[in-house]
Image (cartoon, rainbow, N blue to C red; front, side, top):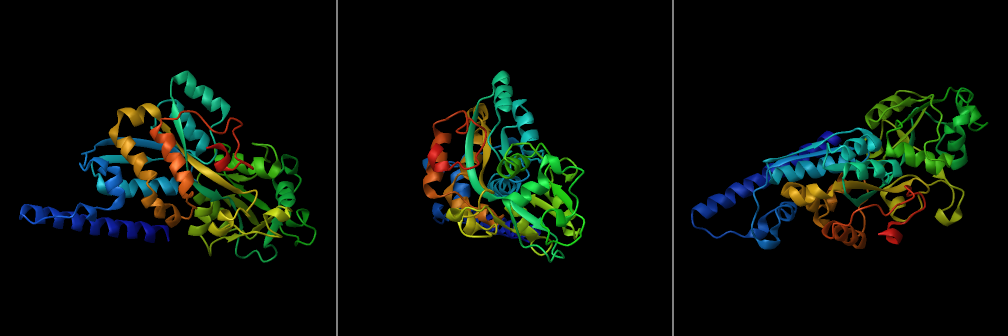
Amino acid sequence: MMVAKQDARVLVRLLLTAVVVTSLTACNSGESTDSSAAPPGEASAAGASDGVKEQLSGTIPIDGSSTVFPITEAMAEEFQGGHPDVRVTVGISGTGGGFKKFCNGETDISNASRPIKESERIACDEAGIEYIELPVAYDAISVVVSPSNHWVGCLTVEELATAWHPDAQGKLSNWNQVRSEFPDQGLNLYGPGTDSGTFDYFTDAIVGDEGASRGDYTASEDDNVIVQGVANDVGGLGYFGLAYYEENQGRVKALGIDDGDAANGNGCIEPSTATVENGTYQPLARPIFIYVKKSAVEEKPEVQAFVEFYLNAQNRGLVAEVGYVAIGDSLYEKTRARLNERKIGTAFPEGSTVGVKLTDVL
C-alpha cells in the first residue's frame, strides 16, 4: 500500500509537470496563463505571496523518529517535485538519535515523536543551536498481535503494564500470565529501541515511568522490523505508530485498549483517526513534532520554504494519506505563528505529552 501511494504521488507529480510544460509552451506562444493553476503546495513553498517564484537549491538534512518519517518523507517528495534543485534527505535514527545529530549541528530538522528532553535541550544550548518546536500531527500508538492470534482482541492498561514492566523480565513469558483465561502460549515482545520517542511515550503512559521497560524483547528503531516480527509470530505482541498499522492491516491485528476511565469511552477503544479526534483512544494518542534549527530557517531559503510547505493547510491531505491525524485549523495557525515569530524553546518543559492538550500549551 505504501508503494501504491508513492506511485500515486509520482503520477500526480508527472501530471503537474505536464501542466507546467504546457503552461510554459503557452507562454512562449504568447498565450496568457493562469497562475492559480500551479499546485497549492508548490505555490506556498515557492513563496507565492509576492507573486514571484524563487529558484531554490541546496540540501535539507533531516533525521529522527521513524513514526514521523512517513509524513516528512511524503512532504519531501511533493516539495522536491516543485523544486528539483533541492535535495531533502530523511533518515531514521529514532527521536533520541535524531536529537543527537540535530544538537551536534548535523541536521536542519529533527523528526520527534515526543518533546525534546532536558538533556537534549542542554546539548543544543551548549552547541549554540536554537530550535523552533512545531507540532505537525497526532498519532495513536497501536498495540498489535499476529492475525493468527484468536484469543485476544483487547488489553487493559494494567495488563499491558504487567507484560512490559521491568519486573517482568525473565519471569513473565506466557500469555496466561497476562490474563489467566489466555492459553498456554509463549509471549514474545517486539517494540522500539531506547532511542525511540515511541518507547519513551509508551513506557511513560503504560508503565508510569518514562524509560522503564523490561529489556528482554526484540527492539528496533525501524518499525518495519517490529511489523515483520509480530506478523510471523503467533505469540507476538508489539507496538508502533498508527501509520505502520494502517500500512500493514492484514499482516498484523490492532488491539483495543481499555484505560478504565468511562470519561474516555466505555470498554475497549481501537486506534483510528476517529478515536484520536474524539479523544477516546487513551492514553496512547499523542502529538508528534518536527524541530527546526532557527539559523537554518533564517539562512537557508530552501529550509524556510520546506517548513512553510509542511505547515500549509492545503497539504494536510498528505498527513492523512500516510495514516496520521492532521491537527485542526486553530492549532495550524498557532503552529505557523511559532514559525513566523521564530519562537524558540519547548512548550513541554516536563518533557512529556501524556495527558497534555496542545490547545492548553501553544
